[in-house]
Length: 86
Image 1 (cartoon, helix red, strand yellow):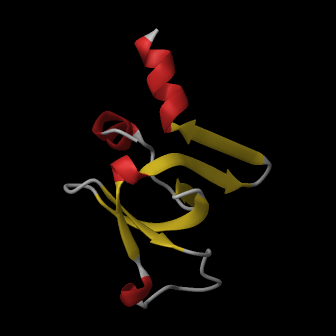
Image 2 (cartoon, helix red, strand yellow):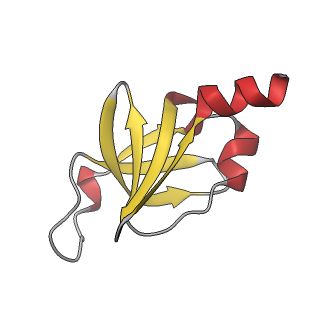
Image 3 (cartoon, helix red, strand yellow):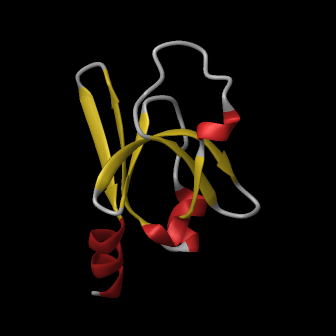
């Protein structure tokens, strides 16, 4: 994911990212630094252990997607770049 894709991402609950081929839960983000705060799983309750957060640069995320209800939306960084280059 490039900077423009990160800046245009609609961050919300139930958001997941693919990092190094693994699906991880997006628990937070650092917008000025364009970082995703990831957890291996979605927490079952309120999350308060910041030491478990893995901070990842947006360039190291290949896809983000949202789950909830009957809808799943996805942003694939490589697909979006290819479409923009056409």
